[in-house]
Length: 368
Image 1 (cartoon, helix red, strand yellow):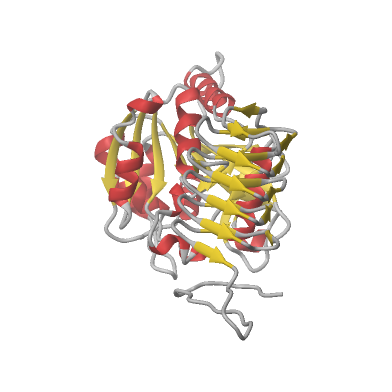
Image 2 (tube, helix red, strand yellow):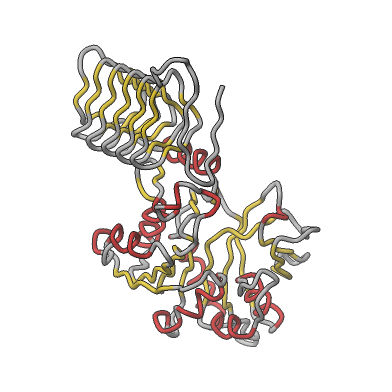
């Protein structure tokens, strides 16, 4: 089985962070989101991985390399325009060949690993290829993962019949047939290539994977489904990304490897990199402090990720993600925030007192 990870989207919902960075490389607990998907595939025994890349392809290549750091072999597949998930399957045809494959959206995060999901697909495929004597073979060609959601009209949605089988899939319906949304993980055999070639672009000009799977159903193919056990988050917006950061930090173990002076305290599950420095500060976990970061005369509260090379001085920060080489100085309280790379957040000293901002496009600022 091969793997296909989609990492080509523009990330418009995370601007301005994604003006200069791939959305799949924004860190969760100081690790790029994309890395979690690659590691999940490796644990499931999927070691040949194709990564669909777009305008941020050079950055993704630099971060992932040839895949050897993850124990996998990576092939990069450029997509010149975002023409839909089924289009990604088509442009990966040479890489995929006739093999079964798992497709994973590079900005999605799952609590549940892929090992059992993949194993059950392979077992079901084998069973459908070897029917009992007198039974008709009902070959399985796809397996989808579903999650119960509060607002199904924002997702691809599955309708399940009385026999517990997938009957229909619809993309972002006004009147959803269920509350079961398609999660960004799919398993296919090569029949999906025929399906993707057989459908027409949607109203938004994309080849929808939901339409391709619906084509499989209409042609009498069997599509197996499972309902997700555990959380699933699409990290494409700030608040879901911060929620995902909280969930992942809840699983870390205490590992205080940096320099913590006598006037500082570290409480709970906190991970501090070996060359980080904590001076006259309090760190309350779960939290993570990256390599080369300096925390001085400050408080870092729960569910905060401070990336490599950051300086936090005379400030309180909690429930936030701060990316590499950024500085937060003399800020009384910063919460529920996503701070990009090489950002300076400082308290101004110029009189008269005022809030002074220099902001790029697509920013969102809340001032008390």
